[in-house]
Every structure is written in C-alpha cells, then in structure tokens.
Image 1 (tube, rainbow, N blue to C red):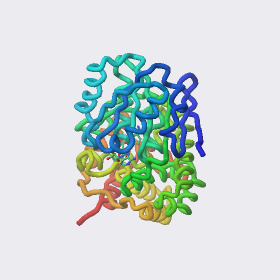
Image 2 (tube, protein in one colour):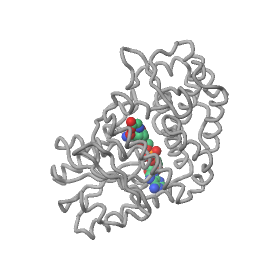
Image 3 (tube, rainbow, N blue to C red):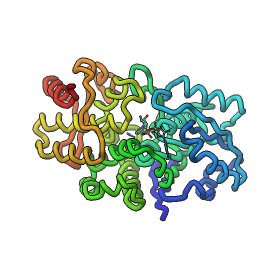
Image 4 (cartoon, rainbow, N blue to C red):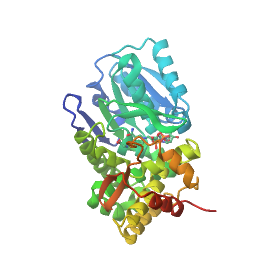
Length: 363
Ligand code: NAD
Ligand code: GLY
C-alpha cells in the first residue's frame, strides 16, 4: 500500500509517495508535469535497470523524455559532470518549464537538484530515489550540490523538489553494502530524535537486512516523517536541521580524506557517528554502555565501526572545512542521551584528539 507524507513548506510544500510499483503509475507524476517534455538524469548503473520503465510510464501520459546518462560514482559528483547536464539541456533547448527528474541514488539526486536550481535560474525538479539512502534522506529536504576537491558538498543550493517518488521495489537490485549504507542514515533518526524508532530498529534489523517489504516501507516512512518534520521547522539549517548531520563532520572528513568513492557515504556516517558517540561519552554526557549499544546496532547492520586512520592532524584539517564551522570553531552534533542530539561548539581539543585516536583503525 502506498503511503504519502507531506513536506510542509507553505506554497513550496510537496508530497513524498512511498510504496511498491510506483514507477508504473503515471498519475502520480501527471500533477507535476503540465507540459509534455522532461529531462531524466540518471547513471550508467541505474539506466539499464529502471530508465525504460520510467520512459514507458511517461509515454502513457504523452510526455517525451530526454535521458541524460552520467558516469556512476561519488567521484563524479563534481563540476565537470554537472556541466554534462547543462550541455545536454542547452544542446536540446530545454526550457524554463522543462522539469528535471533525478532517477538514482543520492549522487544523482544532489547533482540533478543543483542543475535544476541553476539552469536558466531554476527549473522544476522531481526526485525518484532508487537507493535506501536516497529514499530515507537525500531526496527529501532540498539540499543539492556537488563536491569540491577540498571538501564534501561544498558547492550547492537549497532547492526543493515538487515531488518525491520512492518506489520500494527498486531496492531489490541494490547491493548489500549499499543497503547497509542507507541503514546508517535510518539509525541516525532514532539516535537524534526518535528513541521508539531506534528500539524498533533494534528489534527489526534482521528483517531490514533480509529486505522484508513491510519492514523496509515502515523504516522509509518513519525516516521521511522525521526528516519532513525537521525540514519544515528549519529548512535552511539555522537550528534543528543541523542535528541531521550526526556523524557527518567526522564522516565527510573520511570521505574526502580517503578520496571520494572509496568510503561509501553511509559507511562514513556510521564510523563518524561512533566517533560522535565516543566524544559525547568523554564529555560525560552518555555512558559507555550507550556507546556499546550504538556500536552493536551498527555491527548488526554490517556497518563499519572503526574509522580509517588518516592521522589526527589530517582529520582536524579536513573537519576545519565543515559547513557548520562558525568563527573558526568546529561545531559537532553530539548525543546528550540516546534519542536526543545537540550541536556543541566548545569541545575541549584534547578530548577531540583522544576520540580521533581511539576510534580509528590501527593496523
Ligand atoms: P549513490 O548515489 O552513489 O548510489 C549508490 C550506488 O548504487 C551507485 O553505484 C548507484 O548507481 C547504485 N544504484 C542506485 N540505485 C540502484 C538500484 N536500485 N539498484 C542497484 N544499484 C543502484 O549513493 P547514495 O548512498 O544513494 O547517496 C550518497 C550521496 O548522497 C552522497 O553524495 C551524499 O553526500 C548524498 N547525501 C545527500 C543528502 C541530502 O540531504 N541532499 C543526504 C544524505 C546523503
Ligand atoms: N542530510 C542532512 C540534511 O538534509 O540536512
């Protein structure tokens, strides 16, 4: 059964539809496609799996499509690949009314959203996420952008889609490690603001890993509910939205420090979340059994529990570029207790160094 949530942003509010078989339902797309032409941005992995189905669905409502097929991978989430989108749109004379559809994971969603925000100063944008991570997090909330060699997601814009269509059937082809990477962001919602959901995850992790349809649909819906509430309250991250970045200050340092694409985003977030938990414990906010509880859940989700050893100085240098830095101070999302996170900018440097040493893998 399809579930529909709304991201409440007044005149820019939009629905998130979650369910099985949605790619074959043209009526869900019709409302946001008043004109008869769209551009679909996807990649070389997702196109052979789902592009034809989407093209057929659009044909049924008389919409013609321009497919734009990009190379696959985080290492291509950059200005050169973004330019390929602009090239195709301009060459094919796409207009201000031509919507861009993102068909793929978070990399395609973030890049397509940024192209939509900037092409002709803004064109309509639709998200069709096909990874668990994109269905529970990146397709919702309007953060779009690309990486810079000096830092992750450093160039971008807030630009909301008009519709999110999460067809849970697409998860059947997702590799196991990508499923786990998505689960890292699901666990995040439990840790920062939804303890009952965390408890549900502890009870149902095996079902999620086995891709039980009902469990997946529940986890996606509950995650999107959490995200929609936070985004509606703080679209541009002047407060509460920063909490969605639990583990990300460390995680983004891992991703860029290891070279984009060598550590999955979700894996980096998992290792980074354990670093944030370790730091929270050193501050005396949570207990060692709380850290063990989080570690145990990540282990069960087949996520990494140790970060790569980039060296303390390298971590500090990379984290100094975090988007949450204010007046030169790194602001961390930390846990006051399991189920409640805060942003904290006064971490004693010696505690941070201890965390960086304790949580990295030493061969
Ligand atoms: P991804 O987009 O790289 O997708 C992971 C892999 O799965 C890719 O190889 C992709 O081609 C493949 N794939 C996609 N759908 C598939 C399917 N149905 N079957 C088989 N293979 C499939 O990675 P991701 O984890 O989806 O997204 C990570 C990105 O999202 C990062 O760049 C991160 O910064 C970004 N992100 C953005 C936000 C946001 O709010 N905008 C939030 C979280 C993460
Ligand atoms: N993924 C963090 C956010 O959307 O704010």
